[in-house]
Image 1 (tube, helix red, strand yellow):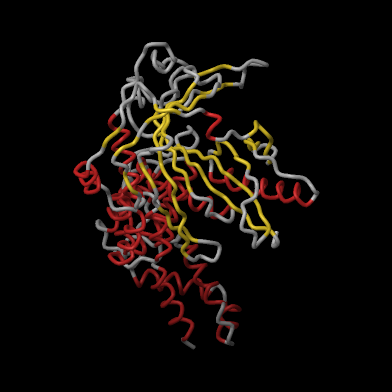
Image 2 (image 1 turned 90 degrees about the vertical axis):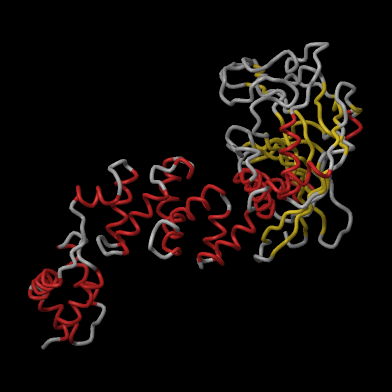
Length: 480
């Protein structure tokens, strides 16, 4: 591998979160019965004219401004001609020579953790195709045209990435941006966010690019990394064995962890692009663009910096929180509602809460424990009603629907023991029952302090105040 350099560019397809399709009034809702959300235009009936959905223009402009791109004052829709079973018209309406978004950039971390800028070539609007269905149909294929006409923003990068990890980092950043802007739900399982990866290799130091393969329709970050790594090894093997890499489109088989040839890769002229005669050019003035710019939310990089400055939390935690607008909002709501340190709040959101969300497949916006409710739990740690360890038990109970922190603590009898006389009595019993360990501790085996603390906490079912237990044991053992 050291002799070879990898060159990667991504074409990310993100479905825009409009209620209706890009050129028709058909619904874009996911999960309907096949072919129940496809109107005459989506079905390719002759004589039916497209009408542009204005919302897709606004969403494309939001993305362009968020990545420091230029918004074209004039963009044109074209017909991209090819035949495929799920494309009834025989062409796809897309943008070619005059896209709505030109340029832009995204900063990621390279393998050494240093910032690296990935250039964005363009982002253009187009309609999605339908979907071929093969499962459960024996040797036949079915066509579902519900997806046909769903608005897509295709985001094309320059070939600036040099590893699969960089490609995933870039894709994650784009994913975060489109969700922040609320222009896409980014649901990869439903196909709302997917990518094609163009991969080639060349000898290190060589200026010319190698022949690329396009890996089609990758719909998870894990598959993107695995598919690219497989393709890198395949291409190097082909070349080192004396063969030539063929320019083609390949599919990734996740079950076998391999790519396989799908078809030869078309060039732009194969599609016979020409301006769509049924659609006027899109003209956007500076006033429209400026209004959208003012509506942009705080974006992930700026939010991360602010969280560190305002709440004094670790940069790593701020980065994790800032990836999701909902996660950052949750953290801030909890941090502002509790007397606990903000870093403690960050630890709980990125740790215990994140683990349960992942376990149950729940988005943080639908968390079973609200930010205010979590804040209430953390307040009970601060005022020493419960210990941090008991708090985890309370949190699990809150997640299971047993009520707020105070209700769980009361119903389960988890209130922390802070009565010093009660703690001293338990410590005395533990020490009296373990004379051998007491003698070893006084002889210098100080690690036994943890042994005594553990016994006291066990006897109190974890309810005793740990700091008081520690002090009481030390004081008692220091006595002759």
